[in-house]
Image (cartoon, rainbow, N blue to C red; front, side):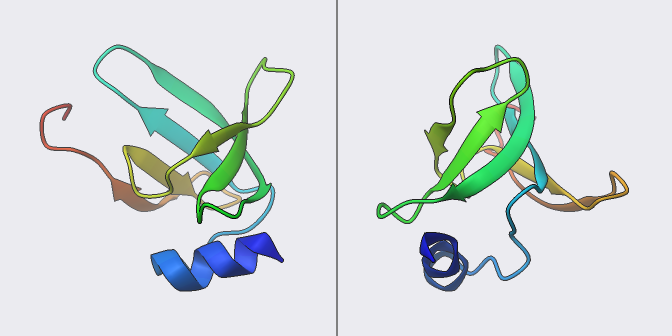
Length: 81
């Protein structure tokens, strides 16, 4: 239910549970899967090798991939590209 809120409020209708994502920063790139949404309008992501999901802003340095690994969308700050 909360993921529906994220889709609507953040304008991300393609986002779904289990979708592969990447968090890209100047120092590190972390890959994981979306596990849900939260009341902050953010997504919960369980990064590969982690025990728990983390709260992530869906439009801050994120890349979204389809089931075949094709890039669907990315939201990157120009300073890290």
